[in-house]
Image (cartoon, rainbow, N blue to C red; front, side, top):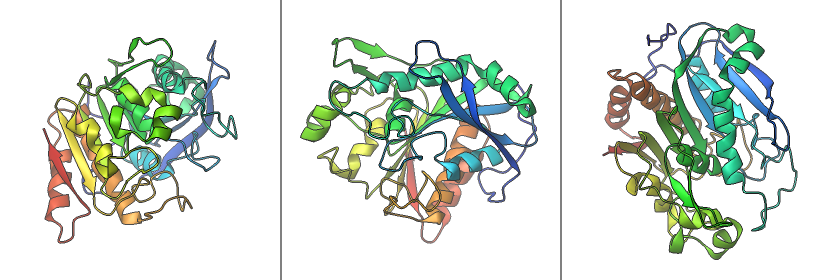
Length: 322
């Protein structure tokens, strides 16, 4: 497969190219409560464009937990040569303003992963729905990214496993078409790391197992992201997908960052407790560089981005790898 003809130095460039964004693109979903709606963002020019599937988190805002969230990342990635596809999962507030989080609620941890597989099955339909993209998508280069609960979704697609709390069976939702991933403030291990609230409300977290997550992945965590209502472990909980998974993995720890990682879920979001445009820009640059190097072996974007991060007089974070 050839390199995309859209060229940009993703390690250093901040200038953005024109982006087209189309939504909703509706993919028929027999057996799902509603058809799957996605947003598709891509550079206006270029061909052989790799794909990033972006899974939204939850939270109190009405629209961020849908195809309408994460514009700071989706736009940056698209401007730097990726086709970004954002589904609206069934636990989105746009579908249910007061989602049921009782133990008996629909197991959306599974339907979320199924949404992503459905998108991959429907890439031809996406091209048909967005004529400007017809023939421009590289179906063989696919990555997944997710924030918070979306990070849990992404981890399952990357090979993490859990035990279904309803039938006691081990669940393997790994997707071989996905060859790289980015986990943003993703949940960590279960067991005694969880609060009583989490164990009761999100019982599927109890058995999270990262030992089978073999796909190359960048884990991004904020060193001030305590997530006290979810874990008793503190900010280190969000590094578990790196610590407990086998290599190859990289960990980007962002200094002074909370769960919003500076505001990646949307522009000027009130619920972001650590708003920092410079941090958001760094997340965009570093994740973009990482995925480019993973999807195109030999590309030096990730090493260049790491070197630039470490060279600054007041670095925003640090990277380690295994």
